[in-house]
Image (cartoon, rainbow, N blue to C red; front, top):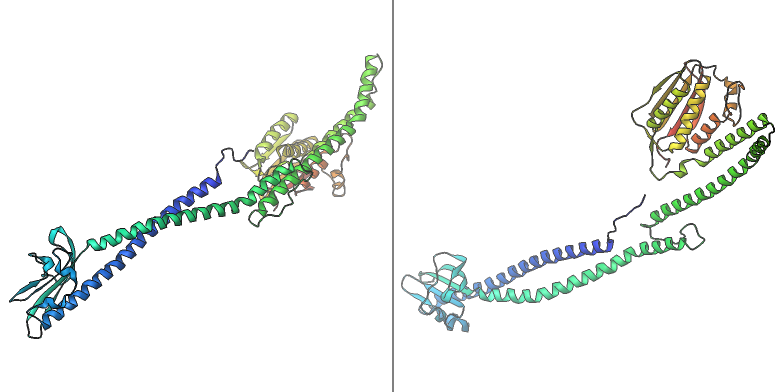
Length: 440
């Protein structure tokens, strides 16, 4: 199985995400900063207006005939300067020179925005005060909001370069952090490449805690592959050695037949038996869970159904009852399943008189296979012997005496076990139990 067919740059995705989030954060932060600055500037703006209207209140109280004496700011003397005052009583109206012939709206007390002279937008504060002589006055101070807008624009012009510098700094920091974070993966890649040339079969370099589990898993896979290669070489050598002598015997008998001589049938049959036994032993030794990928499982129900149909054709006079779920996934190679099912069903078919029963189920995380027949069975004292390779209790029944031994060996490799007992049908009961998943 090939992983990562379509390559996607982790660096590109992380940096793209950093750019997006930095941009979003600076944008949101910039808006918040501008709002805070505007609120602060407006408070200062209003504070100035409040101070001016306090002076105007003193003016109408002390010099009601000329309240402008207290208003000392030069802006009040320049026409349309942007800073204005006005005081009005029932008898008279006074205004700053800056208003010229315009008037302020004194009808509503408090802060408000109003139109001013020359199309200006004003921030206006109006109040009602009573002079010591009992005269009721309406007074107001107004200032052009253009001054506040100029402060905001000036602040924005200074904020943008600062935000750009901060963004560049954050992105540089993200690049450095990313290089530091991906450094162990780069080292891991180099270590894997070095395995192709060095004699080491595992990665021995130390890695951070976050990468160490991946290295451990990779070392486990490498170790497993090494064991499989060594096991395969050893099995091939053993099989070649085991077949060498019987093959030479068969070749010798064939040559004798070509020359008109008679074939030694006993010797030939013995050679064929040795070849069969060697192939069976090799098949048993060559299988096991090491040949499976992590998490790989296969449907035992389907394979049992296929094997059952073959056994029915092999023993047409035997009634075979089969019970199995629609699907049962087990961590066992199909070749091993076929070896187990085939040996057990064939063995039961050889000994059964007229009936056999095959049941496949799952209980407590394990596959349970029960094969029963109505044959003579095996005495309790002899059940241990039939699990030994080559042992045959009855020489009149064809066979090599390897079937149950092979099944027991395969099942043991998968951390399962095989037990023999007495069937309700009267013959032998063989029960196989294998974990459905790999042991932790």
